Amino acid sequence: MSQTEEFGEDLADFVRRVAELKSARSLPPDDLATVLDAAIFELDHVAEQLWPTYERLSADGQPGGGAPDRDEQRLLRAIFQRMPLPVALLDRETVVRRMNFAGTALTGVRAGFAAGRPLTGFLVHADRVAFRSQTAAVARGEGDRSLVVHLQQSPGTPVRATLTALRPGAEPRTAVLVVLQPSVGRAQQPRVPRPAPDLGEATRHAAQLDLADAMTTALLTAPAGDRAAVLERAAAVLHGRFADWVIADEGAARPRRRTVLGPPDAPVADVHAQDPAACPLVVEAARGGAASLQVRPEDPDAFGRDASGAHVLVRAEVTSLLCVPLAARADAPVEGVLTLFRCGARLAFSLAEARAVDVLSRHMALAMRREGGAGRAAGR
Image (cartoon, rainbow, N blue to C red; front, side):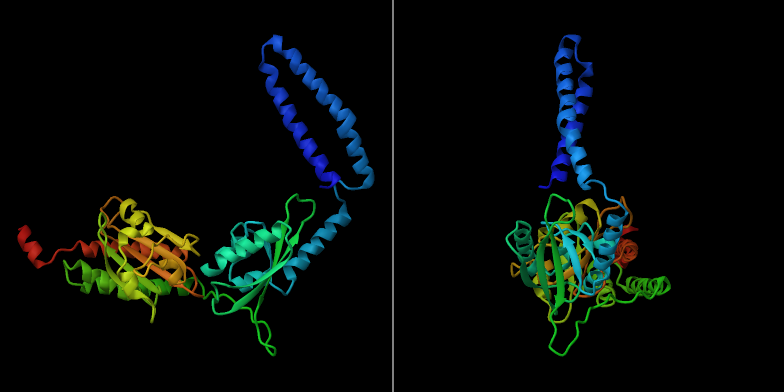
């Protein structure tokens, strides 16, 4: 630890002790003599230790930092941001502190969103444990490391992650600098995948209107009183155009799996055989009526395990999910639960899309509560 760091810690301890002395003013007069002795001792400490140390450091030019130091910091920050290689600065828990422009282009995540979140959240589940372990080893000073990982943005492309220890400025803890390099052939240039272009608010709004129109048509033409048919038709509308997976469960107290639609060659049968009561997200939505929007879900057990015993979220390579209760209004009973998955490089569900699904879920609940002709006749 440098002299500047030691001086800073000593000064911080002194400030805390002074605060304790101030709080002791409310003691009885008979006990103030001891407090006075402690205050005199602290003043002696300032005069004999802190002040001489401050003068020595000031003479050496260590504290503060003038204009040249600030210019140097701005230059280094600009170099970090404009470096053509994807670079990120992490702590020992893989939490992103800084990420440059090339890193955001590679991961498909904005720098403001990435900061404060673990970098492992952008990797496929199979690579997360190894990356955490290697990062912790580098932070402990066990030497530089390198390993191959796969990003959820493009799981088919291996990425070489090189980690090295770094002590930024006068910070007491070691950080980890990671460089991400997509694996390429000899004659190829690194190709950084870019997020899908934003076609504008008008295009997104039009797509949501088309989805609402298709859903309304499906619900109005579904047989009245056939709750399973309502779920099947609604799932068919959402599958493919809006979500890679559509899972519909009927009921709240004891939910029953009715419909599962997934990508080609996906383990649809295993997910259909799953007991919804073993899915924490489904149980929470059915009992509490709370919707859930998750991007790069951290907990692989959030949707339980399928019939083969594998985590559903890991096996389906889920990158974002929506789990909403089917209820006609906030205080109405839950008719079922609708769960949507997006996988691979597909853009994550947005808040606007979550709001649209919330509206559609209320329409589905109303359609499920419709009675058929026999039910109306019996009610007369």
